[in-house]
Image (cartoon, rainbow, N blue to C red; front, side, top):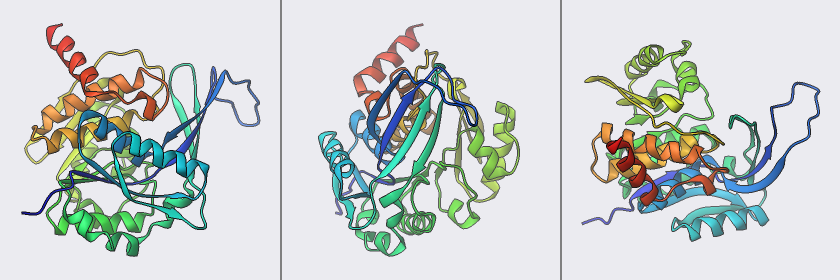
Length: 311
């Protein structure tokens, strides 16, 4: 019997440069910030650590530079228990970085310089077919080369491995890619871009999700921030409420949700159960500063779910 590798995350590893300020500056305006921090992140790394902290076996596929940021990211991933043997080191590109401005409402504005993340291409992922074929689930985002993502999704689909695609940063995607996705997890903005319609409400989210179902996605889960998430598939739609929380920093909120979703689905939970759990993980993440530092442990999530059930 083939030994499964658990969750395989294919994605980005970045060093986040986080500035905290009262509000985002206008064009041409200079503001004084309140704090600055370097924080390991990148959507792929965040999702990998999110799942690993909850107890999942996680293997990461990605690329960093041969520099200080790259060495630090590899050390962080190993410390978190993520298998790193498939994280390559570029000879020519620097480790990816993200410039993040967080205002006093906890909202963030992010500019990503992908660096080494974009170096991994179709041939590189094709060579890792033995890894993908042994996964229980493959999770991807869009901070890496899009053609590589398409190739990886096609490979996973051919092996019968379900794919979670977190379509962020938002960009147009072809139907062939979407047809290989078992679980698509856009936020409201991303759902609007992918469907070609404005999404300003839960009703709009449902309409956008149904457009994406017609493009071939099996399940669409639209994340709605504090309002929770909306599941839409061929059986209908279901709104899973969120958890009340005082947001201090929304960095990695979506990543924590996706890592938790993968953990729950590979643990045999129903989609509704998995989304409720992932909502709780996301709520805990926005209550703390940073990306990886904000990701909760399993005990914290179980406590929140217990308190919510008793309320």
